[in-house]
Each structure stands twice: as C-alpha cells, then as structure tokens.
Amino acid sequence: MKHYFVENPVSGKNNPIDIIKEKVIPAAEEAGIDYEVYVTKERGDAIRFVREKAAEAGDETVRFYAVGGDGTLYEVVNGAVGFPNAEVSVIPKGSGNDYIRLYGDRESFLDVPQLINGIPLKVDCLKVEDDDSGWTEVAINQASMGFDAEATAKQSAMKKFPGAIGHMTYLLAGLYCMFTKVYHTFRCTVDGKEIPGPFIFAVGCSSRWYGSGIKVAPFADPTDGKLDFVIWRRLVSWPIIFKEGLIDWQTKGEHVYKPACEYIRGESMELESKKPVPINVDGEVRIVKKCRFSVLPKAITFVIPADSPYFDQVKSGEISSKIDQGKWHKEPFHTWYNDHLPFNVIVNKWIMGYGRKRK
Image 1 (cartoon, rainbow, N blue to C red):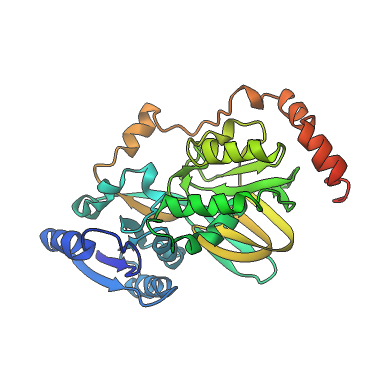
Image 2: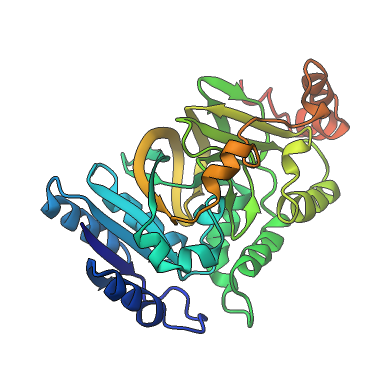
C-alpha cells in the first residue's frame, strides 16, 4: 500500500515544529512503508492530486493523509470520494481540525506510527448540490446556511487581528455577525417536511463539531447512514439570542436543549433563499440561492489511530447517538410553546408578516 502525505504549506503557520520533518518522515522511515510527501501548490490542487493517484493505483489500496486543517481534509475527501481503494486520514496542522475530535485528540492524530497502523472505518459524507449552477461537492463533516455560514464568510478577515487564530477568529466573526445576521427567511425542508422559520441557522452534520470546537450536533453518528439536521429558529429577542449564541451554542454546546432548536435525523435537507447567500461546506464558503444537503452512506474509508478510544467508548455508551433534547421538546407542548412565544407572535407574524407573506 502506498501512503501519500498531502501537505498544505499555508496551514498551521503558528506550529512550533515542522510536522513533516519531525513527525511524518521519521515515522514513515521507521515503519518502512512506501510513501510520498506532496506539498500542494494552490487551492484545489489536493483534489486533483488525490484523484490522479487513486486512479493510477487501480485496485490497490492507497492512503492519503491530509496534513493541514479542515480545508485540507475537505480537498482530500473530494479527491478520494468515488474511489473504493482510497483511504483518508488526518495529521492535524491547522487551527481547527474539528472532524477528528470524535475519534481522539490532536495529539493522538499527531502520533504518526499509530496512524500508519490505524484502523479503517467506513464513514458517511454529505453531498452538497447547488441547484442553479449544477455544482456538486462533498463534505465529510457539515454544511450549513445562516448565521454560522455568514460568520465563516467573515472569518478570514478576522485573522488580521493580532493573536486571532483558531476558535478566536470564529468567535470574532460571530460577534460581528450577531448584530446583523441573526434573522434569516430562507426556506428549509427536511425529508420533504417544511420547517417553519425564520431561522438563525440550519446545518446538516455527519459528525459533531465545527467552528474550531463548537459542538453543534452532539448526537451525530458518522457511521449510521443518516445526517443530523440542527435548525435553530429565530423565536426570541436579540438579547436572549446573544446570550444563547455566545454561551449555550459557541461555548457549552447546549443550544439543542432550547425550545427553538429543532434536531432532526434524516437523509436530506433543501434550503432556498430569495437572494444569493453564503453556505459553509466544511469551512469552504459558497454563494447560492438554492441547495440540497443529502447523505452519502459509507462514502469514505477514514483511518483512525490504532490506539483510539472510539470503539470502546461506543461500546460502553460513552459515545451515544440517541437524541435527547430534554423536557422542552416533548410534544404537543413543544409546538404549542414555540407558536405562542411573544416574539414569534408579535414580531415574526404581526410585524414582519412571516408565514402570511410566504404563502
């Protein structure tokens, strides 16, 4: 089996070590594997490289390690999807690396010998389709529209501030968007059922974390052949949203227990906006009006460290995919409560005309 270490030279500029020279090469030489280090030249280059090498290998298994952040993993996955002989893993070099959190910490994925001897796991992906252009791409972690996509679009601008790296850039972008991007009137449909708005965001998830550590979908299972759709409806006033967004969502990951948060496990979500808006696809920003997120079951073979606690944690129940949103989501109380919230009645329905104008 050939091992390819696909490095993004732009990612992880603040790393104290040279991961390729100090981690990858010594481990590869010690293991005696057939390997190659490839440094990407531009955006999209990793997709091209992975596709070419996977095709050249024919029926032989090849493994690609994304040496970078979530953006590097995104490109490696989009190159590998559709090739049954391709395996994918991560050597974290970026500031985010959200997808690997379910299987171990950053240090466990920096233990290259444990990755070389790692365990292949078939995982689900998301197919993202732009209906207007016909563009199709794949996300291994998540895709979204609304506040968090708007914040992702602003995130790169926040990196110019001194000390702004990792989650801090997302937090700063979120604070900026909190004043203008928390009321969205796009249309949202999950498995053919329309979810009433307006919205703060709607996200489809294969795994649990995004935004450099925000636990957006705490019950997601990347191996169950389904997606977890987390839809946060705008049903309360701005001061409450500010508190819930800053603490319950970004910090604690407890937004799913709020009555306005819908958590649905399914196969597809369609989103439609009257004007072009950003969507976030594994940290990559696209501008669309109408798009679809659908599950691709067992689309990628993802390799986790040989000493990962993941399988034991699943067996013991420490990692559980059971959806439990607490007492606020018991029906019929949940629907009645949301329908009668003062902000929803006075602002959404009476003042904004939301619902009546959409008919």
